[in-house]
Image (cartoon, rainbow, N blue to C red; front, side, top):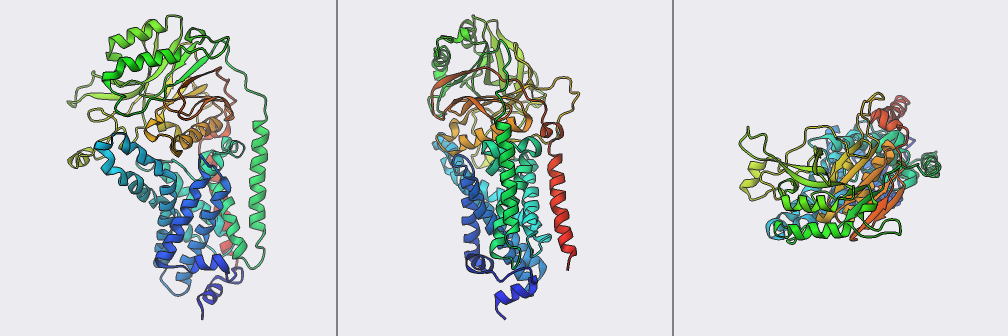
Length: 551
């Protein structure tokens, strides 16, 4: 009996002997199978910014279905079940490895900023991190295999498996949800609007199911069109909902608030050093005082000035000359909100100094008490996990702080004079979705989000585009407007529907002026967090379970 015949006999009458490409993928084994999985995953990166071609996800998701079909065939052809599970896991690992290598290659740029010190470790970032992250889709493939059935419901099994594994990627250890599969929808303004109900993880479930559906066109004996037609209908409904939401009138803006965001476009190379500290401050002041319109001739015409993350190559709070120059600059009444490293000498119980990646506030009187310390630090960038072990091989975090940064312990609220309460986000804190929801009677709810970041580490690559898209999705999820100041871009002011009101392109040295939009009423996602995605997953599982009960 041929392998094709064995596949048909084992799977039952609903599953056709596949032809052409589907057959080649299902029956592939060894390095050919690994190569198909790797290449398919890599194509999926085209669905992420800056290309953001969502239909590109059809290729990896369709191949994922066929690759697991091939793993099932090995078991139903007489092999042990654990071997089938291992085959699914292996295919998922290679699939994920290709996806992450193609989507996160730009991380290598950070290793070249201080090349003499870090260039040797570049392969660990470009290949090592993707190899570790690939364990998550591998687990997703294996989980899907456990509930796999040779009919159209296997599309939903894959969506549940990958949806759960992507959620794990967001929470395991410190979490790293960068380029979660749902961003294939989240990078498109209209398609992203459904995130106000289902959040990022819900987008992942929907994207996996929708873009995997075409796999059934080549493998179903009957009713091969309904899954794809239903997926197309779902995608169209999502788009229509998004178009309706985006077409709403412009959000009203807060009275008596005029914000200016500075984007200095300063590299993280040798020029960003304490020796050039005063020159950098003077450059900031000159750029921030730039005339942008007949009604905004200088910084005195704005109420709030925002500078990006870690804007200074020194400790601002310890530099009297810099503080005096900034206070004099703000004499017209403007309030400055800026990213800056901070040293806290109050706690010496462990015999070391404690540095924080912070947001500070200043006005003409000097440094104000309102601040925020970053809570979710970047592993290897801002601190070293297993630091003592890595120090033995000469590897330290990228930031030049003894021992790296400490995580903040306070709330993520920032109170800026003259502005409503803000939810503060530094750098990649903006990529984490709202998981828990917020109480309706919260005494101090945020009314906007402030994101300061320094993407200069990644140059003119895909990284800053991906980072901005994920930050903008937080605004759509919560209905909160977003003000984002980035050293090299992309800086922007975004309303609660993700519509861009003002933007500075990547690599530009400029300032942008904007009012601050009012927040929308709390979205479903903001109220209930990721609980909705659990109900979607249970619905998918119920369909799979019902199908498994049928003969």
